[in-house]
Length: 117
Length: 218
Figure (cartoon, rainbow over the protein chains, first blue to last red):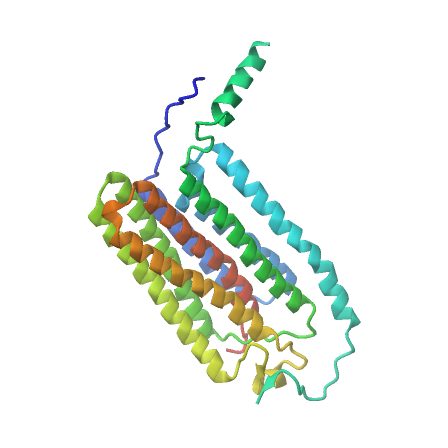
């Protein structure tokens, strides 16, 4: 292993590959819009839609942003740090469920604040 | 022993200085680091929105099929297609075809600009209905009793910041297209990274803001 390692030629991917990624992204978007109109539990819907979005994000990062053709060291530096930091933000969620149970029960009297007449 | 020496040499080769351990230039690495930090900004906003929604008694689900969902789906199509044209611009740049880069980037700008126009029509429509950052239209308050008035704040903040990113992306791409003769291939690639990131963020904003708030009546 010499310090002057040969620059590896970038495998840029073919037009056919990128068009098929684009078609997949459109198809997943169509599926998301369809699921948006199916009646089922909102939390389940959130999980499914976010799951599909993560697949779409992964496709965009891997192919459009060329991450798949980069060195593994770059991917291992960027992706885990990003995922861990985003997951750390989830620490707020237990508090959101707590604050909703602390509220006075809602009455049917008309809302007076925060309404634009 | 031999493998230890080999490993040391390998580490020295990559991280001992004077080499490119990531095999990307400093500008491209810088753009990647910016993208990581910007993705945290958007995650914080989307998680803040989820927090407010989860802790509210009620949340308006006001987006009708026409125009909101149709518009936002077409906007998604615009962004995805502009990403594809951006990929083609980077491919043209790899071939050294500067005129091709310019043509494909112009196509990308067209997609981004139509996104902004459609989004502004959508905003205008909601503002006409009476939606404000901290107030709901009175019909919405009647239809969704106890709904949080922060709907507008989350909607305008998240889609507004995203629209601002699209707008700065358009300026960035226009300058790249204007100066393409003096730029290296990697510079075109970096502008592509930014554009794809803006597209990627919309892949989360669209389902979370629009598809989870569809109006089943319309």
